[in-house]
Image (cartoon, rainbow, N blue to C red; front, side, top):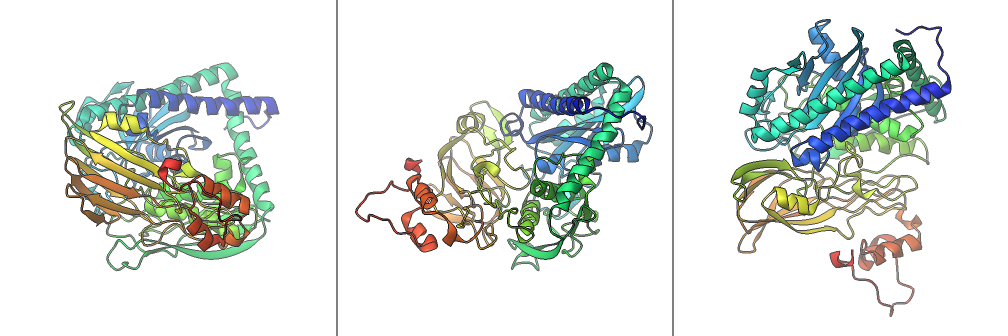
Length: 583
């Protein structure tokens, strides 16, 4: 605890807050520049942050919202398991969904940071690895039946002591993960990130003084709480319940998986409660969410609606009450429930679902629904690359688009999904073709795929991937075919997700939303990613915006006429062709 008599001035508070942000950024840059797999050095599917010794998030960090929103659960797991047996030079590795982690493919390193013998912080790096030892080469085992089918589990283990690796544990990881040297390179990049955070945090304590830093940690949380309370106090009181649907993929739920939430806004207390207890039990597949992903989803959605002035810190997090129950697909999983897709499908819907509820609280907030799952343009790919005479495994992130429309704005194209919200970098076509034996023949915005509304959802992708000289296995966990991203406040849904395989004869066969399929050289995977839902009455969309979308090839005139009642003022005038060439 800090000295309660020490009140910091505003300048000192701002300087230290910015210092934490700078530390998070430097950690992230370290990981991005040294990560070995494409999913880290190209797609940037990782996050870096710090908590204090009491597991409080100071700044949500540099990374994906689904990673950073509940990062505090990882140091809590370290202290729960090891107590005071935590020393300088330690580093812990954790990918257990039952010990505060998101899902098995997100491997998290957590290092305690000491200054003059006193535990001050935890430095955290969480990275989505290309492989974690599933029976099939993927990191989203959506159809895994239980925990034991989800590859290698690392339940909060000490992987470094006195800054030296636990050789046996590292070798165990390499023995159970495809492309072991790629894993080891990614592991070293993560170690570099957490040690960078440790070093910079110590320098901050040396420069500013321990008592000043401790005072900041307490007073900044008070400030974050005050800002969140103030933002909530300006909302109208409300209690509402709402249900959304995920495609039917489990026995007994062929007609769809329901996602239910009740939100209560209490402006007097300055609190928002999200009640998720009225949801289905754990499913016999890998879609079940975890404590970390439920927590991060709720906090992400609410704080998005409260605005950017509210700090992303534990003080503001505590203004959001989350109710979840054990043995729930959207709650606390009951062992041995599978959770390998806990960061995607249901989490994607839950975040947008809570954001959509705000549209019923006030006219100035809320969003429609965006991409569900990972479209087939963002698959896990694996095989043997004869160019290098070596196996490969990676996740590509192409055409991960389809952001939802929101009050006052069209959808953000590279939003991707609620769990990433633009923080996942779109992979370079040229780099992907270098890293894997593939040709990306087509990657375009798909006309008419954005949900119609006063504000229009962003487009989904039209992507064609051809296999070159070596067979490639594609593993995909998509969604939004049976239930495409919904519109809100009168807006219409976005376009469906659909995927096909084109064989060497040219014949097309449609694939389900979850699949593992191996394509031979010359065969093609054709992916249509879903578009974001629309927001507001389509009849209120301005003619200027409609014509701009037509001229840019995002909307065909036929679609505009059907959904917006659009008719060209001069029928004899030409219009720009609506095709990928126009983009």
